[in-house]
Length: 407
Ligand SMILES: Cc1ncc(COP(=O)(O)O)c(C=O)c1O
Image 1: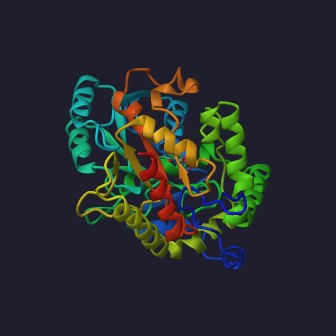
Image 2: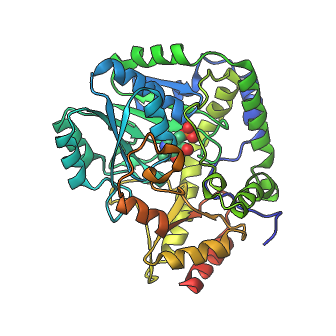
């Protein structure tokens, strides 16, 4: 292990200097990134926001105006920022456990919950790990009970469910441009809808809750320059792995995975400069995804037939983006062994979330604490393998060697 060669755990796009220059000189439109998304999704409406969480919050504000129901349903394994956004918008959070095999809802439970709770306004479908969720199954249940569908595409920009892009399948969608999420502006997001009639509701929410904040935006611009400088193997350890290890030493796995959040998440307008940077990088989307898929294939091939592990893959006919590859271990103890061995190895092995959504102490008053068995199991049994652009096939071989040795 060398602290001067540390591979990021997910496939964030490194920023190119020419993208920064292009952002300074580009003068096209108010929100050229939203224009990119409208064109890409063939959607009538898209708008850049200061985070994926902010985008979800605005979507919830719009839903407040569309229905008198006040509960939103989420899966048991999802980013803890999601229930915070729902709560801040005034909704009660309900949870449906995921199934035993992947990140999709347990469909039987979904049907039971939606049939029993007439207060459910919307359901969040999560395309986690860049793998398109089974939208069709959840959509059928949602439509039957007159429930709005929000697609969480924070980790899945560029993925296809059959021949349709994720983000175009439900009623609303949001994306994230946080550091490490692929296309980035350090912190940022996009909200979109295929229904033109909801556009003004989303715009009203953004106008009301996202004022200009010069101080915070200046911080974000500096963070984006920091990302440009440090998001490379030679420097990544100092800004990411070192603090992560310190939090692990303090026994705080939630902070180590950067999952300590609160209801007071920032809401503000994004500068033309940061929008311009992501707009310039947008042209790289297909090329970067092709690379990610190629690296995911290395793992699929090298671990094929390996007893004791299963790799989560796209369903037939779908196209996942694989910002990382998810490995499910039969035995949680074997997972722990690999994780402990590799956490300092600098080869991009990590975890998705520290807890099932009902188990974060700071969400205690927001998320009902029920036994989400499959959500908890996936926390204990999974780890993630990087498909970052800096990962070489030699690194992948080393990862596979360690996994096989520990099994
Ligand atoms: C699945 C998922 N949903 C929502 C979010 C929130 O996005 P953001 O970090 O841009 O607020 C994230 C990212 O952390 C995520 O991974």
